[in-house]
Amino acid sequence: MIFDTHAHYDDEAFDEDRDTLLSSMESAGITRILNVGASLGGVQASQDLAARYPFVYAGAGVHPDHVGELDDDKMQWMYDLCRKEKTLAVGEIGLDYYWDKESHEVQKKWFRAQLAMARETGLPVSIHSRDAARDTFDIMKTEHAGTTGGVIHCFSSSVEMAREYVKLGYYIGIGGVVTFKNARVVKEVVAAVPMERILLETDCPYLAPVPHRGKRNSSLYLPKVVEEIARIREMEPEKVEEITFENAVRLFGER
Image (cartoon, rainbow, N blue to C red):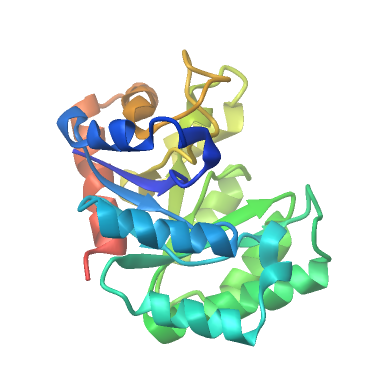
């Protein structure tokens, strides 16, 4: 069984075959999918998908590129969503200094506000961090560590930073990038952190693993990620599936 802990099946890349694709998941061993928000529209779409498919769950949170959409009323709306049975996480939230679509101060303001929402509603967080490793870590350590836990999605920082997050109780999200030949650091992270702190994810439709790199990603490709983790860790793929599934259930549970 595989738990995809970070997907975007509301993306327009799936508009032509979303139902057919999602309907094929359970028979392929993909038994749970967490569809996370990005924009406010994505938050609602995640709720809609969770209502339609028994094995799909929702995250409620706004990506740093879209935090300009937020205000107090929108936050209250998300608070209400966080109390729904199939909302399992606050995310994806965080900081993005690569695209810089919002000022750093605006990003930090709403990052902190959404971390507070996670604490108050008891939900773990799904964290986006791009070119903002130190600021993300510092805010996580001071504003959230020791509370509801979470995962650093699509982890791309150093082994040392991964170990620091693990010390604070967080999980490390690993997806298709680990299969790329030039992904030396991600491979080192997989080798260094405890298996009990690794989660599987796709970030689909993005970041498809080899040999599908450059194509639309989906949860059906996660066995390729499992195989690479198994190779790095010198484990059987079935054991990687078992441990990562247990990790995801431990973090997100079912409400």
